[in-house]
Amino acid sequence: MAGAIARHIVVIGGGIAGLTAAYRLQAATLSAPLRITLVEATERLGGWVRTDRRGDILIEAGPDSFLAAKPAAKSLALELGLGDELIGLRQGYKGAFIACRGRLEPLPEGFSLMIPTRLRPLLTTGLLSIQGKLRLALDLVVAPRRDDGDESVAAFVRRRLGREAYERIAQPLLAGIYASDAERLSLLATFPQLRELELRYGSLIRGTLARRHTGQRGGSAFLTLRRGMGALIEGLVNQLDPVDLRLGETATALTGRQGSYRVRLSRGGELEADAVLVATPAYAAAELLEQLDPELSRLLCGIPYASSATVTLVYRARDVAPVARGRGVVVPAVEGRQVTAVTWVANKFEGRAPPDLAPVRVFLGRYGQEGILERPDDRLVELALEELHGLLGLRAEPLSAVVHRLPRSMPQYLVGHLDRLASIDERLARWPGLLLIGAAYRGVGVPDCIASAEQAARATLATLQIQASAVS
Ligand SMILES: Cc1cc2nc3c(=O)[nH]c(=O)nc-3n(C[C@H](O)[C@H](O)[C@H](O)COP(=O)(O)OP(=O)(O)OC[C@H]3O[C@@H](n4cnc5c(N)ncnc54)[C@H](O)[C@@H]3O)c2cc1C
Image (cartoon, rainbow, N blue to C red; front, side, top):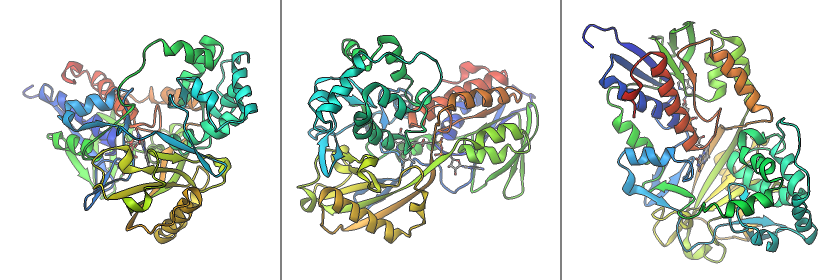
C-alpha cells in the first residue's frame, strides 16, 4: 500500500442510498489506498429517512418501516448492531381499513403488497358488490395478454380483476406506496410479480392458490426500529469513520472525462474523483450531469416526482378510542377526498407514544395535486382535521400538530420506466466509475435503496480494480 496514490470516490447525496454506499466502500479503505468523500446539500444526513421526537412521541417524517421480505434493510440493521431494536407490527390490532362509500371496511385478510394471498376474504369482503366479485372471478378465464410490452398497473388490475377491484382495493393501496396515479404507473417496474403470476398460471387467482402451498408465511411483514427509522441513519453515520463528510455543500456540476471526474461544489471548491456515485433524486442528478452528458441528463429529467404532505396530530387516547380502529385507513381516489391514508401510529408499532396519547398521521395530496404544498402549515392542519371529521366522524381537538412537507419526494415509475433505465444504462456504460443509485431507479423502498447502493459499491470497486472481497 505504501507509496500508492490513493483513489478517490465521491458520493453525492447523503440519504439512505448514499450513506449505505459510503459505508460499504469504506470497508475497502482497510486494504487499499482509497479516499471517500460524501457531499450532502443539507446540514442533515438521512434524506427522507428522519425520526423526530416531540417529548415522549416519536414522529416519522418519511418511512416508518420497511418490508421484511426484502432482506437488505434488516441485514444492514443487524450488521450495525441494531438487532435488539428491530420490531415488527404491533400484535392485537386489526390491519388496515379501506374507506368505502362513507364506511370503513377491513382490507381483505392476506393482502400483501397488492397481491392477495387468500381468496375467501376477497370473496366475502364488503368492499365489492356481487357484480364486482363475479367480475373478479372472471380472472380464472380471462386470457393472459400476449405481448411483452409494459402497461399501467391500473390497466392490468382492471383487465384481470375488474374495475371495482381496481378502484376499491388496488388503487388506494398503490397510492399508499407510490403516492402515484396508477393509470400511469408501470406494471413491469413496480409489480413484475403480478405479471409473472398471470403468465405462469394464466390467472392471478390460480397463482394465488398455488402460492398458498409454497409456505410464504410467518413473521411481521413490516419491520422498524424501536427508536424509529432514524436509528438506521444514526447507526450508519456512527460507522462512517474514514469518510470525509461535507454537509451543507451542494454538488452543482459533474465534469471531466472517462474515469477522471470533477465535482463542482456550491461553496466554490472542486473535488477530483476516480469514481462518482450520484445518490440524489433523478431531477438533481439531471442538473449535475447536464454538461457531462446532455442525453443522460434528458433521460433523468423524464422521471417525474410526486409531492405530498403529512400532518401528525396528537390526541388524548380516550378522545379517539371509538374511531382508532386497526392500524390505519387507506382512501380510494373515488371517495373524492384529499386524504390518501391515515395511520394510527401507536397501533402500528409499540413505543411510539405513552398509552394515554394517540398520534395519528394524516397523508395529504395525490400525484398531480402538488398545489397542496402551497397551503401554509395552519391550513394543512385544518385540512387534516376536516378530512378526519369527514372520514371518521372525529371531532375531538388534538393536543398538538406537526406538519411535514414532502416536495418531489416520490419518484414515479411511469409506463416505459424499464426502457428508460435501459437507455440510462447505455449512456452510463460510456462513463466508467459513474453510477446512479437511490429511489429513482429500481425500487423506492428503503431495502431497494440499500440494495442498489450495495450493488453500486461493489461495481465501483470492481471498476477501480480494488479487492471487492474487502466489502462485506
Ligand atoms: C413520506 C414518505 C414515506 C415513505 N414511507 C416508506 C416506508 O414506510 N417504507 C419504505 O421502505 N420506504 C418508504 N418511503 C420511501 C423511502 O423512504 C425513500 O425512497 C428513500 O428514503 C429514498 O432514499 P434516497 O437515498 O434514494 O434519496 P433521498 O432520501 O432523497 O436522499 C437524497 C439526498 O441527496 C441530497 N442531495 C440532493 N441534491 C444534491 C446535490 N446536488 N448535492 C448534494 N446533495 C444533494 C438531498 O439533500 C438528500 O439528502 C417513503 C418516502 C416518503 C417520502
